[in-house]
Each structure stands twice: as structure tokens, then as C-alpha cells.
Length: 258
Image (cartoon, rainbow, N blue to C red; front, side, top):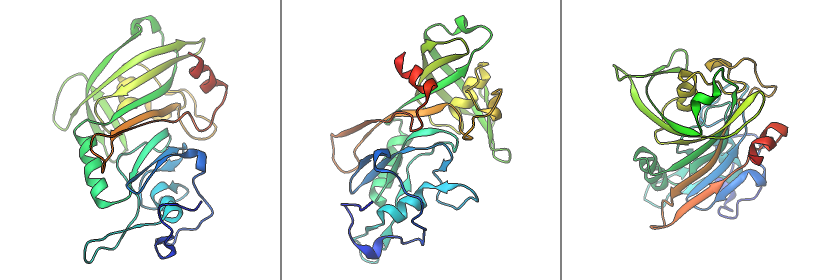
């Protein structure tokens, strides 16, 4: 796909990335000279470093969209950089900055809690679903084991633990699954997965956090459905986006009907 914002061929493919993989146009939810929002597939990584057998979105975007020229003296090309992270098995809205200034501004927006993030989660039916009510708030203190790449949510503060807050709403109930809509108020490592697991709730396909069985595509049923953030270069303008699950199937269709 040609980027209408950058037609300088000298800035395309600047990292030597092969063009065999690209982001389809219907997965590009927003694109201007400052930032991009992509509807991520399960299995795609938001990290710039190469991981064997995994697609790096920053590297793909570097080839597909190229770099933005830095106007300051001595400034080199700047390639798209992830502002926040989505876990590899998670799908949905993810934001990339296209300039250093936008990266700084958007990173501050997320750090200050001024970005709005809503997720959809398909949960294996718990033993006592009525205890959840129609919605509620979960507050935990999360500690991450970097060696195991796993987080644990505790009910009290402690050394190395960071406060984590989310709100959930029960969108619907089936025979085997619950459909939850989740709003994040903090952005901790594996936050939704760890907090739900601490509450005895397991996302379909999430073996790491107690799911019974894996999904065929290696993903989990957690999708970043919507994202809103102040535009980094246009004061007073808020970008609001929604992206439906990029791999629709009867289960996601059932969710949407709730």
C-alpha cells in the first residue's frame, strides 16, 4: 500500500524488511503524519525487535509506511514506534507514533491515564457467575515475573507491586461463556488477564492464566475494541476509534449481538 503521507522512496524499506507481509487497508483504522492505529491480529508483536516465528508490527510498518523526515539539523529518519503494548495473543486497536514529538506526547498521554481503552473478553463460564452481578470494579496490586513473562494480582500492596484498576460490565451470558466489556484505568503488564484470573475468571484460550484449552490460531479471546486519545499535534481534538475483531467467527458474532 502506498502511503499518501510519505512518497519519498528513500525513506521506505529503511530497515531492510521484506515486503511479503503487510497490513491490509481495512485494518488501518487511522493514519496521518503524526500517528497510526492498527487493528492488530493475534500473533503480531508490538515490539520492534525480531522474534523468530513472529511478525513485528513496527518492522512491517517501517517497510509499508516508511519513515518521517526529521527537520531538525542532524535529524535522521524516524520509523513508526508503538506507544503502548498489546500482548502477542491479543487482537485489536494499537497506536503507533510517526514522529519523536508525537511519541513523547502520546506516551505522556498514556502515562497520565488520559487515553481511553475498552476491551472485549470471552470468559469460560465460572462456577458462580451470579456473583459477578452486572458489572463492577477490580482493584489489585500486580507484580510481574519477567523471567516467566507472567504477572500475579494481589489483594494488597507489597514490594514490587503496582496498583491496577479496571471496570467490567457483563454484556451477555451463554451456556459456556460470559461476555465482558472491560475498561482499563491503568496499564500494567498482562493486567486484564492477571486480574481476571485472580477473580477466578479465565479468558478462552489463555492457558497461561488458567484457560482450559488453546485457540486454533494461538490467540486468546481478548480484543482491544476501542481507543480514544488526544491528537498529539492538534490541541482540543480527540481521536476516537473502534475496531471489531479482525478474525470474526460465530463466537465474536454472538458477543456483538449482546
